[in-house]
Amino acid sequence: MNKKKIYHFSQNLISLFTVKGLELALTLGLIPYLIFKVGVENYGKYAFAMAMVLFFVNFLNYGFDLSAVRELAKNKNNLEKVEQLFNEVFSVKLFLIGIAYCIIFILVLFIPRFEEARNLFLLASLLLIGDLFSLRWFFLGLEKMKFITLISFLSTLIYVGLVIVFIKHKEDFIWIPVAEAIGLFVVSGLSFVGVLKQFKIKVQLLSFREIGVYLKSHFNSYINLLLPSTTGVIMVFLVGLFGLPNTVALMQIGVKFTSAFSTVNTILTTVFYPMVNREQRNIKASRMVLLGIGFCLSLVMFFGSPFLIAHWLKLKSVTDFENTIYIIKYLSPIPFLMGAISGYGVNGLLVYFEDQLYSWITIVATLFMIVLGCVLIPVLTIIGGAIAFVSGRLLYALLSYYFFKLKVSEVH
Image 1 (cartoon, rainbow, N blue to C red):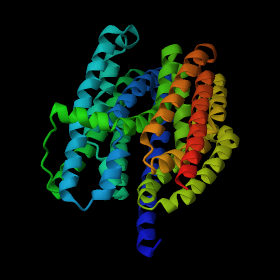
Image 2: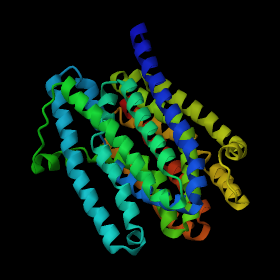
Image 3: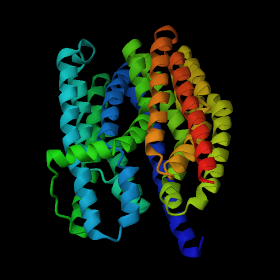
């Protein structure tokens, strides 16, 4: 790797670490504040609504961080192709947001569990409008991670600022998702307009037939991105269906904590993905880095959780505090498992264009997790959710490893 490539790689890595560090500091620091202001129960109601909406946010991103990034990385100097990709992604997102809102309206109008908190779910759904204009996939494809840094930081900063100013009483919890939606909409909208002007892109929406063709041809990438990125959200949602609001809050805290420890893996996977697609000889080195760091983070998460939770959350209930520690200890293998999934799956099988195989692995592992969650959560509540979450990730990692080894044997 020459000096120019090393500099470019380092710049992208530092940019993503910066944004994630700032984002985590702001959002994790906000959780104790929100619990103090609105209480554990109301925070749990908010977490349940956000679990549903975040699933739809990932639903809108129809595998773009994989398929569109891969296409853009190979054609970033072809302005005609760039415009084509831009219009494809925007058209598909616009179509999918219509479907998402149809489903949301059906849920809040006809399903009692959602109907009783209709206003909260509808306000939370505003996050979808902000995400419509998100261009994360675009900057990933161009390998301009510094723009992702700036956009994510500014939107999070606006969100945190609005929360501190307006969330003062317990009943204000309904406005928390609105603050998040405003931050995302303002910054994403400005970046969207900026890209249109800089690249002289003319927005031309695809026909329904063309959208149908796109959805069909990119379905595997969609599955490979949607299900892995929503497993934590699905667990929070399932706990919300079977448990009480305070158990949802604790499960979401556990998932957030785990996400913080998995951030390094997420960043390295994002930076490595365009690189290993250009030069497959980098696959082994990237995998060793992902596995090594994941293993170390899992150890820190297991042994350090009591100290970290005690100094992060000021939970009044001793039971809530102990349950949070138990959840995090159960979830501690996940950073290592995420490293294995990234090393053998995203930066392994997908580099060999085994999108369909990887999508089947994703579906099997996710369905296994959901079924196990539905069995265990009614009996063990949040602990059942944690066990199901880890078991699903373990199966995902094992299947990715097994089929990657088969593929390598076939290639060589």
